[in-house]
Image (tube, rainbow, N blue to C red; front, side, top):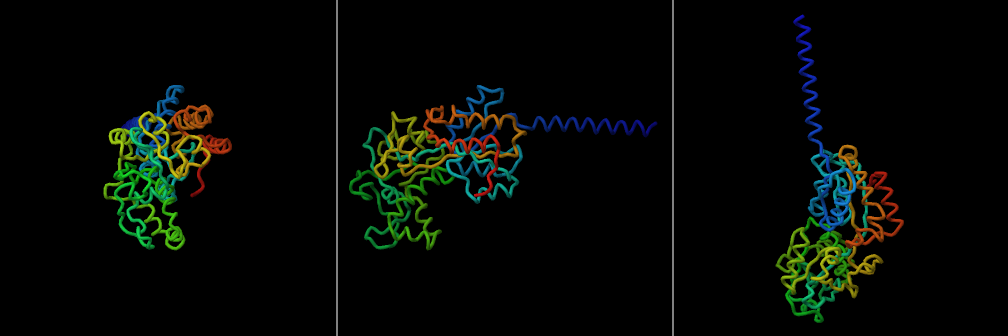
Amino acid sequence: MFHTLSRLFCLSVAVTGLLSWSQFSFAAERDYISIVGSSTVYPFATVVAETFGRTTHFKTPKIESTGSGGGLKLFCEGVSLNTPDITNASRRIKKSEFDRCRANGVKEIVEVKIGYDGIVIANSIKAPRMKLTRRDIFLALAKNVPDPSGAERLVPNPYRTWKDVNPSLPAEKIEVLGPPPTSGTRDAFVELAMEGGAKTFPWIKTMKKKNKHHYKEICHTLREDGAYIEAGENDNLIVQKLEANPHRLGIFGFSFLDQNSDMIQGSLVDGVAPEFEAIADGSYPISRPLFFYVKKAHVGKVPGIPEYLREFTAEKTWGPDGYLADRGLIPMPDREREKFRHDALNLVPLEGI
């Protein structure tokens, strides 16, 4: 009898402990979508999240602006619910990031391209509009530049004013506010604008095949003497600083220019203005695709992920007449939208980079 009671007591304790653990585990799960990443994609994702929260029974997703690199670092930490479900990116995931994800158990990643954006170099409307070439941008902001004497060698950047770079530009001090290394905007800027300018020097262009590491070091290394000023991930703060100092320039996505056109203006780059049509048809030289990445392992564990994907990829959202186009997103062509909508709704994982 004693042994029977003892066994019943132990069983009761075990069941109570199991129920308590189940309740604890359930309580520990999230009931909202966690999103991190790009400051450029942030305003688009925020509008979608607010619409999603307002029109469904799911909670509004929580979004943090961490920069593309910072977001992917958090996303790739693992599949625990302490990690984000989605990360926004203003560039494609790098192979090193993809490999890091896989090494940490994040083996099924759904890639969703959402549209295109232009990177603008803007100033206050109180100052004359700048007309720059990618060569001007490279010479103004690279840490080391070709010797002004014409010799095929690099020297520490000697240029102090825009007029020093190009006689047709104003004699104003070079001061450019831009994103930090963790930003996808920074990655795209150095690749599209800085490399584009560096390649106008034939001897640097040929270096890409001979010594790719040195070539990238020349193109991607920005000045550290005050001409280029890291302004964090807050693009709104850059807009405010440009308004306060009309002689400064700032680097950010087209959507911020579009939303603040009463205060700032985009510089012409190689003769092309950063306008919706020019970015859409590829004639504006500093444009890039925007993405977000979904952790498939969290689907079914965090409520609302498939429904959020459905809202984001609906024509009323990202189509030519969608509400994101009204916010400055450049829509993809029809076939591209169809492809990425299919991949998103069917949770098709990225095969490799």
